[in-house]
Image (tube, rainbow, N blue to C red):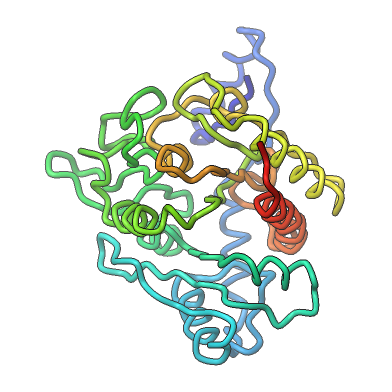
Length: 324
């Protein structure tokens, strides 16, 4: 098993001799994490905010910029997309979704997909946490809800779904990064999206969630080592998707059940979607495998998106075929 950790500078001085003494192999991926964060933050600060028609898809954007872009698309391309909110976050921010209606591209594959299917895209699920990661803690991953008994904030939104809630791979302690929450769907973000999916689950063919990092394409189950009923169809879709992805730049993705490919975890949105009748549920763990980790350079945004879109297209065409 390979584990990535970040440690305070003063701790690393005692940790490295211990690893050597215990014959544990290690590689230093980022020698100064704070400096790496400051370098990336400095690039953003020096960049002038451009007008929305010139929205740059090859840089990271704040939540405000992303929402402005969504408003702009909805206003100027209402024939292509429809924007709506499925609810509000803990801090009162709207949870926006874009429904793709059609495409202006000449790509026949995209036209075929959008003729037969609608795509619902939620650019940012954890809006409060994402905003906080820009203003306070670059590595914040939880929501921003408050605990009644502890000073710690937030719940792991991908441990808060009502499927084997707070079982293996989740924590009951509010200060842990994998805190599952006081009860299933305690987080308004999770509750709102779960309600939307329940309402439309008879029409939904696939659920895709995107995370970082590991270069993996995962499918159920996360909470147990078991084979899903439609394993052959899902496994075939995953195999073809990672091959399509690799065809772009040669980047290899592992694929398989989340429990055995990544780790066991409970209360995930992917397992919930599958358990609620959505036959194809996948979780992408995007680039890379740890060299940059959560600080993926902006120069890698375009290739990551290009190759991932090939995988998404491949999964979509798999849906349009009957698999038994």
